[in-house]
Image 1 (cartoon, rainbow, N blue to C red):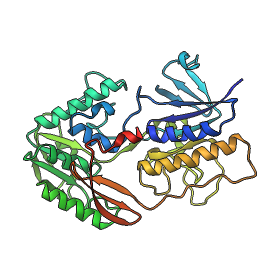
Image 2 (image 1 turned 135 degrees about the horizontal axis):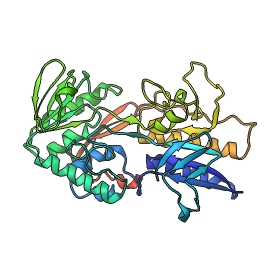
Image 3 (image 1 turned 30 degrees about the horizontal axis):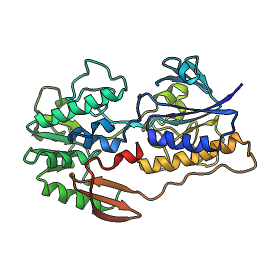
Length: 369
């Protein structure tokens, strides 16, 4: 009987990179399966704000029901892919389900205007395009926009660039933007927002109870009143670790909802101070935004390298190279690029902060989709 190796992935570039490396070194008697709940490669989280504001690029943008120690329960069988049952058994799995944005930026849980969805999202590309166009219309129709949180700094600058003169505000609970990066990043972003007439309010937190559908007035926890036709919550991503939680709640950190992993990216039951501990799940790996990867910032480039480590370790286990230690993951220095409107960006790479020019409206995101 053909043995199976399973890769699951919501963040397509992460799961796809792991699958690509494993497929290149997998023995002929093995099979690799890549599962995604969308019917198309989903775009990276960073590009969604741009596509939700700027029209014309939205077209560029299987479902697992439960996870067991050695099998997954699918929504249905896939005989066209040689999977005749809704239960798929595996020898090794890489969990690369990423994270999701809060409502109303989460396609699976909210309509573009933030109201509860009348019709559920099914994961098709046509639905995704329609959702993004609906978001574009909601932003275009709003007389003023409030962006809450520093999770998507591109949103306010893109809106200000596409709709000059439309009042745009950013509310952030911290004293600095991007506090994990150099202070020069904060300065450059703040100056760009001020040049675009974006009203930036720092050190204030939104009172979520005041943000209800149909009301154009919200308030902060200090009592400040803010008027805005449209409120966009960009308060950070949430790891998609529900399947791991159901498998074994001890594998997920209760505070962060991140999957606990060893340096080898193998799933472990609980966070420990000591290293090189054994794990009851040596055949399951967790990577990307879903993993508590030793301080690595949740970003595509970090997930990419985690995928490579996990893939090489899977191949080593498949080839039964037990005399060699598994590869260990070490995060690199913080790195990021933030677009500031349609033509400018600020970046930090290897502790160097710089300003660059954007040459393509779709941010050239197609190269990783």
